[in-house]
Image (cartoon, rainbow, N blue to C red; front, side, top):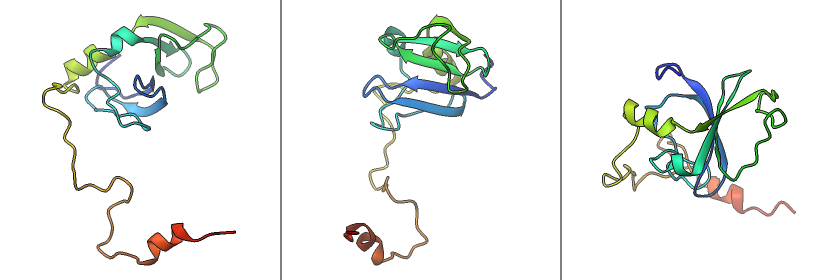
Length: 138
């Protein structure tokens, strides 16, 4: 696959097992699990995951080796059962080549003052915001 052409990626998290759908993925883009926020791609991914490609929509499926995939029976999210097993994933090498892997000693840049729950506001705080969640509907 061409590094510059975005593609859809379906990848299982090694830490929590949640399935993550990444649309328009390019290898230079760092991606994190939707559930546990762990980095989805690192050097150890090749030891635990296998790669499949849907022949109908070109989606890459990077699944845990424990995940049962029956070729010709298991379906892609597009509905096609024409899924090809490519074997050990080459995704970490592609990400490294594109500059998407960080050195583990560098750590991830985490903004400690970022509120991951609320979007950036207009500067005003609505006093009723918390009350909206604390009201008993019944």
